[in-house]
Length: 331
Ligand SMILES: [Zn+2]
Image (tube, rainbow, N blue to C red; front, side, top):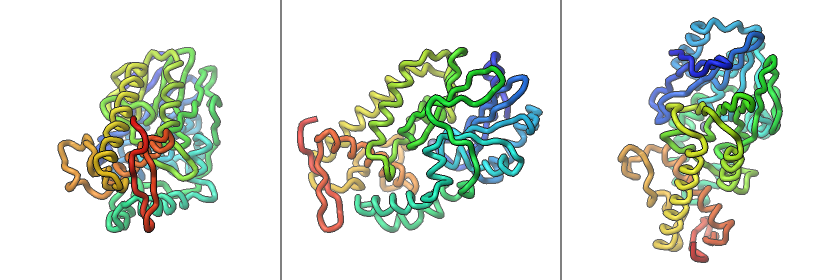
């Protein structure tokens, strides 16, 4: 399904369903100018997404010889079908940092290192073992090593007179980028700012404090004049500045909740603390969480615990191969 979401410049949204995924859908935006069209993100590498995306491309009548693709970040629901474009010689643009995770020399290391870290933080091995078969992000990932033009903060994507600036907004992923059109004051926010749901903030190797990065990136968005925001998932109705405030409150509450869990049960692992948090999982109890949801909850809990540790509010103590948490100072 394609709908026009902005007039000047013409922006269209191709809705790509993500089957059996709590995100429901990906919004693939297409910015059209007389000389060049720019598509943003692709959907998972699975037939349902491919069909929806290409039917949208046909409906729009895109001329592929003058189309470019921009990928907001490395997650597979955004990059899965990138080879469809590479194989047709369509130029791909992506933030340098996330591109390094997918196409750099250590592309697979980060998952292995993360699994090792999760193990030490108490994540049960039986849930780790099934991630490769149950986590959609892994099943429907693109083949690594695709070529792309790496972008740094402030780089512009050539779009025949239209100023399309890529801004580095780390947090959701280390190299996440949004696109900003300063003259029109439009923001293509990827997964940095979502309405109705909150972007997952995880932990990463080589990134000491993703939650702090996320706060800083939200702060940067606050300084931009924005008339309309186009998020990558769910509906696009909402004010970015208002949403930034809500997201900051959400994480402050989650920090407090995690701190209180560590205070009430001293010596808990991060995994045990994750099980004490109120997640918005459509009423599901923690015991019913599938393995991949536990993975995301664990990642998010760790990002908050690391933040609290950095602020000297909690202490991480290693005991026989496990990291245990104690509160250290009042919140
Ligand atoms: Zn994402």
